[in-house]
Image (cartoon, rainbow, N blue to C red; front, side, top):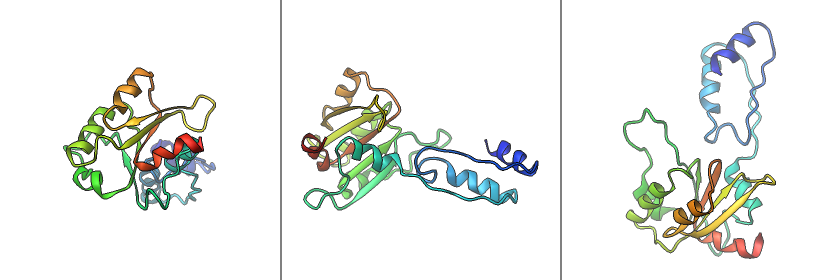
Length: 176
């Protein structure tokens, strides 16, 4: 993608790299912009609305709420495979943030849940998995950290999806 954008731009063509959501939140937009800078190609970034906030909202889950959540963390559920070890500080995330939003984590959900519980998050913490968010195919499964992986598998949810963990998930019943 990077080489193609540079090649076409150097041919004098106007190149549009259209991405869903916000290209700078787990969208490789920063990496692509760096490549353009390195190759002397001028560019403009037009951010969109990240799936991290739009998908939960569409499912009736506010990420913050004065009674439940004052902090949010956006986390990838699929780190770069060339990394030797995870750079996610599960020991800090597990108990240091009210609402956790995980991108690309459906296939690694059992590992994510294990990391959170092992690092102090209550197994009873509400959780939701939202597949194909903001489309007519959207499906949402709710549960707790203790049972969300099993429920997600039983319902056959597959990527793409967003996972929300925290007390705000309780609001879905009233707000969906």
